[in-house]
Image (cartoon, rainbow over the protein chains, first blue to last red):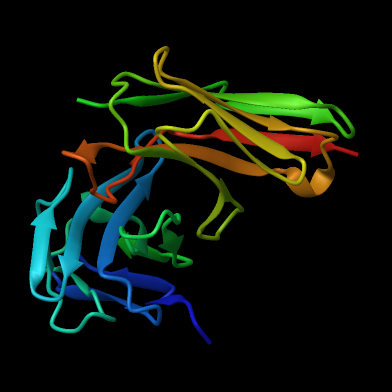
Length: 113
Length: 116
């Protein structure tokens, strides 16, 4: 089915561990985004990618790494997780050539103990 | 720096009432404005997208308006139903020249409860 899927849906890990959140979309959208959602801050952009091998920082990139070797995948890695990175993470995709809204995944709820 | 504000943070209304949700933004230079709905534990679902050159968009019982000069948008929900209960988020995309950057800047949302 066409869509955008995130995995895992839930993850619990410890401080200092590396964790990777996966995002896969089937529309061949050129743009992909990672947001985090926190009480009191709303949704904030972490990183985005305009195409394969092109990535750039958003509003809150510190502590995160992204890569995009294929158009359909956009993984987000926390290289050394901290408690402040406990959040709900959303991946989204869009085609900026089209006047259409972004499509969002169902999110990954990440808890860092 | 563009900032998006939504007031009120929460709203409770009886079923059948017409209601308006408000969104304001500090910089009138936007590429487009989008309204989303978020149900608990779920992702965001797009409701309406208004291009910067447009004044309003309609979908079913929903109508969104845009006034760039005053930095405001409203989402009008007609004949509200309990199934409309959710958090409604407003977001703008700042332009990069005349291009669509795709980078959404969100308000913190209005949580709506429609009571039967």
